[in-house]
Structure formats: structure tokens, C-alpha cells
Length: 441
Image 1 (cartoon, rainbow, N blue to C red):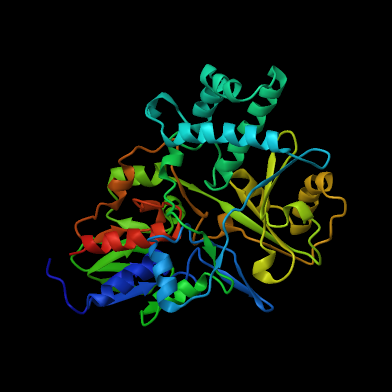
Image 2: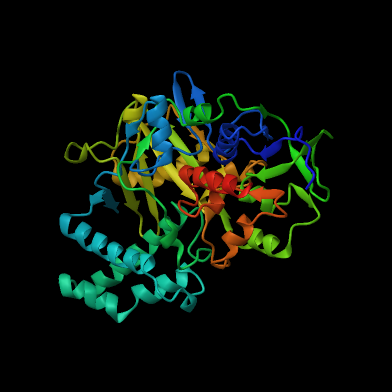
């Protein structure tokens, strides 16, 4: 190609993937420009200041700090973090009852057994989705023998255990997968992609990582890209307000949800295999509800160190995290994925809290009224159209590689949905960007 040196490499999207790619290209001495649709940087990293606190409404965790590149950025820039591992979980059932030690042991043993089946699945083609796999395993003779070999429980207790475990996996499909069992591939857990070591969060916001990555990078905000014309040697990128940018190469780091909804038109059209991959890869919605109170009504002297709580109400699990230490005031974090996340978006904070209170009141004597409720609506966000990717029942094992393949050495794709390790995570987006930069030259 006869490319003018005046035309930069343009990166579309100033999230982690886009800024990482731009930083790496600049380090290599390349002319690079980032176009961002929003009026802020960060994409699905969004730290909102409320009074004196910074709440992460997008990504929150570094998932394992050992050899994690995001942790390396934290250390280099001396960013403050707090360890937040999922400490010993508390399980509640009806009428204010905690699982006793035996009930908890049986439940967690059953959970571990089924998780191992998902992690070590050897014939995924036998199952159309995660729901079908779970139903076969949980109702198998092998599972029954496994439970009976370790515990002396009667048939009624086994039936109850199976129902509780099935419903718990429905919760896992929502969090951390932003989906449901029917939409998930039976192989979904094999692609978890977390690093070992502590999980940490940012008291002053994940945005500090974005600040570090964007330093000295040329970023133009409020540039909503609508068309990428790569039919000529010089690529033309046209925005919503009619601006035209010329590029030698372009890296598209917008969320998979934006590609799925065709907000960006490509000319020529993307190859059919790429279009099919975009259509088949899973992308779900995941939302947070952050609720603050005057007092910790959920604290028990026997479980004062526990930060991860579950309530089972006979057909559904409610999970919430105690994040009070981060903000210096009683605060709970509720996480919702899939259909629940959509419900959150279409329901007022008052009605959401009233619904949640019904479950809490079964367990706790006096429920305090919230003094502040924050909720996210990533599914309604036109610049993300959801939260993050998952391994869907409809995708094939080669489709991520198909989408990662450059088009004529002109158009490249990166993002958490294309991560070889850690899809759906910040470190996955970071690693995807490093991978794509190597393909440019």
C-alpha cells in the first residue's frame, strides 16, 4: 500500500483496549489518534463521584494480582487499592435461618462437583447449552452416588439440594456471565480467565487506570463513528456530525454490543464469516445496585468478617456484598445479570428496593431505609449496548480467531470479547490490545 506518513493509525474507542493499543503504538514511535464517542474516557470503566466518594459503576475488580498486567500498572503508578476477596460466604434460607455447618458443607460439596464438570467438560458437543449439561449432571446416578458416599441424607433432602444447586447455577449464569443457562455454552466456565492471588478494588475509582493509560495520548471525544470506508489505500472514517478522518490503519475497540447493533457501517461490508462471528458471540448486560444506609442491619457478631451473603427464597438466590469498609459507611452491592439486569433498567430504584426488601425482611429483623441508591443501566447505553461478553451456546470455537483476523492489514479488532485469556475482564481487554498491535506490522 502507498500510505502517506501524514495519516495516523486511528483507534476507535478510548476504553482500556483502545488506550492500551494507542499507548503501545506511541511507544513504538507511531502516529496515533484515538476517537471516542463519549464525552469521557474509560468506556465501561466509569467512576462516578458522589460527595466525597468515588463509586465504580462499571468494572470494579482486578481479578487476581499475580502476573496481572493491570496490577503492574497499579504498582508503577502507586495507585491505592484494597484487597476484596470473597470471604467465607454466608447462606441464608427462609425464616431467618443460616445454613448450619453440615448443610453448608453438603451444599458446597455439591457445588464443587458440578463446577468441576463444567471446567473439565470433554464432550461439549453432547449439550446444546449449559442448561442441558447441568440437568444431565445433577440428575445423574454419578451425582447421587457422590453425595450418598459422603453424606447420609434422605431422598427429600437430596431433592431439596438439587433444586438449590440448580437455582444457584442460574445465579452464576447471571453473575459472572451476564446471561442465563439456556444462552450459555456448556463450555462457559473453561473460559473464566482469572489470575491467581488476591482480588483488589479501587477506593478512589478504577478511572485511575484510565488516567495512567491515557497520559500524553491524543484523544478526541464526542466523535461518534458511523462509517469506516476501507475501500481505498487511505481509510476514511466518518462521524455522526459529518467529520471525516483519514487513517493508514484502524483498530476498532468498541464493545461487541455496538458491533452487534451495527452502529458502525463498514464499506465494503465485513466478510460474512466476521459478520457471523459478531452475531454468534455472546454479549450480555450486567448491572449494579449500590445501596447505602445509616447502619449495618445485616451484621452478625458471629459473621462480622464475612462480606459475601446469599439468601435463598425457595426458587431464587439473592447475592449481595458488604462494601462498607471501602466507603466508610454501611453499603451493600447487589449484582444483576441477564434478564435481571434488564429488569433493573426498567424499574425505579424505589421499586427495586421494595422488591429486594421482601427477601431481606425474611432474614433480618429491622431493615434500615436506604439513604442513597445508585444503579447502572449498561444495556441502555448506546455506546456499549450491554456490559461484557460470554461464551454463548451459539458460537463455535474458531469464531473469536475469525473476528481477530485483520482485513487487508487495514482494519483490526480488539477488546475484551476477543481476549485469548480473560474475556469479559479489564485484563482481557488489555491483553487483546497488545495482541492486535503485533499484527499491524
